[in-house]
Structure formats: C-alpha cells, structure tokens
Image (tube, rainbow, N blue to C red):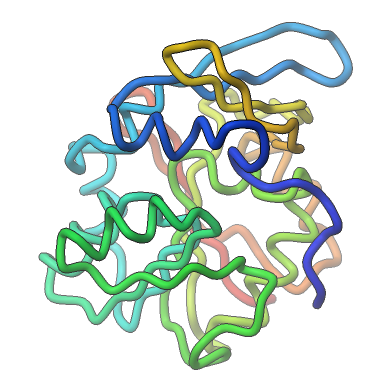
Length: 221
C-alpha cells in the first residue's frame, strides 16, 4: 500500500516540530474538520517517561515489537526495558535522531514505506494519538494488518469517549509561534472503531482504560 499523498506530522514551515523536540516546548494544534472546535496537545508529553497507562500497554506486548510513530522514543524505550526486541519508525528526522542519541533503534520511515521484516512483527504499537496518522484510521489499520504476523496484535490508543469519530486539520506550533504545514489527523473511540472495522481484516478483541486514557487490542479477523 502506498503512502497517502498528504503532508505529515509537523513537516514544512520552519520545522517547528523539530524545534519543539529540541526545546521541549510547542503544541500540536487540532482544529476539528466538521465543527471547527480546537484542542491542543503539549509536545512535551512525547518527551516524558512512560507512565502507568503506558505500562498497561507494555505489559501486554510480545516481541518483536514495531513502534509506529515512535517520536523521540519514550514508548520504544519502555518496550525494550521490558525485555522485548523492538524497533521504532518515524517520519521526523529530529525525532529519530533524538531516539538514537538515547541508544534506541529507530529508522526514519513512514508506516506506508517498505519496512523491515514485514509480516514478522508480533506487536505493532500506535500510541500517543498515532491512530490518527494520515487522517484515516481505516487506511492506516489496513496497512498495519499487513505488517504483523497472522497471530500478531495491534495495540492502539483511542479516544477515551468510545463514540468519538472525528477528523482534524493539525499543525505543530513552536513556542515562538512558528507553524508547520497543515496535515490530517483523526480521533476515534473504541465503539466507533469497532463499527468501522466491520467487514475489515481486523477485529477489536480487547479494550481497557487507565488514568483516563483508553486502549484497544486488534487482531486479524
């Protein structure tokens, strides 16, 4: 499957995502496509250590593990510390460099690129909103189903509201107000995702919440 022909996370402009990662500031600005409402996510959260909610996901993984949209490597680090053979991929050069500086194995690739060992990954991670990559969970998950083993799992973070199903126009804005090019993003909850998966290559087989965050496990149908 080829990559969607759209801008990606934080690209363009004056590379504010790169600046935000280096300086620990900046925000991900999300404007809802249908309603025009706005919310913001602090970029600093992507630099934080894994917390109890993240650990609930790590406890369910088995290797080898592919962390899609690994960013600077906070979840990748936790997966490796748990003893699992793991690799991260991200489109951001700065994010990948940050991960590598920490000694973490990461490659500058999109999930829609040709990836190492496709079909051999036991667990694929889509955390920190990464189910929104490309602006279409259905397209993203169809691609992810090609990457895991026949008995593998996709562990994804979803919206805490199970019925949320909404697209966004997203930008990354650094502390000096410089903005990236706009790119598509998406939020979806567990119930809405289950409906969208009907008739697809994946089944939603488990869901749970910890500390106000929600997660699901998907397997091949």
